[in-house]
Length: 75
Image (cartoon, rainbow, N blue to C red; front, side):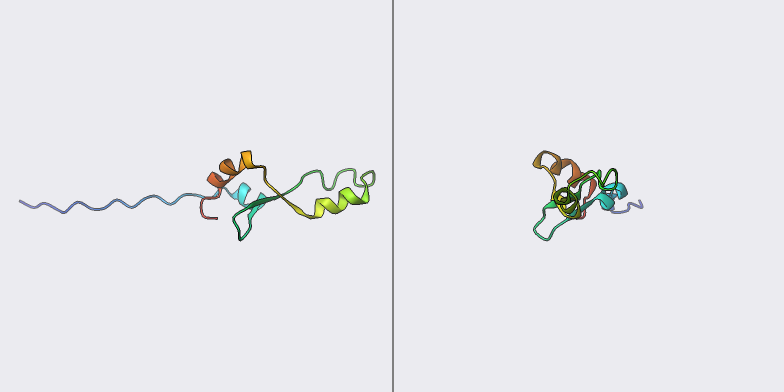
């Protein structure tokens, strides 16, 4: 009787959500950072302080981190 040994099934690779990969960056300490929206619309009426704040990345709120980390499995 010809019986083959049971083959181990490989786990499937998880796919990175490309839209999330463009919007979020992971720091070396593991924090998730994002850029704020509303950067380019009505810039003349915004104060200089607000426009400077748009240049920096912001940390994602702790309630959203679990959801975003699922979209970026290998980061």
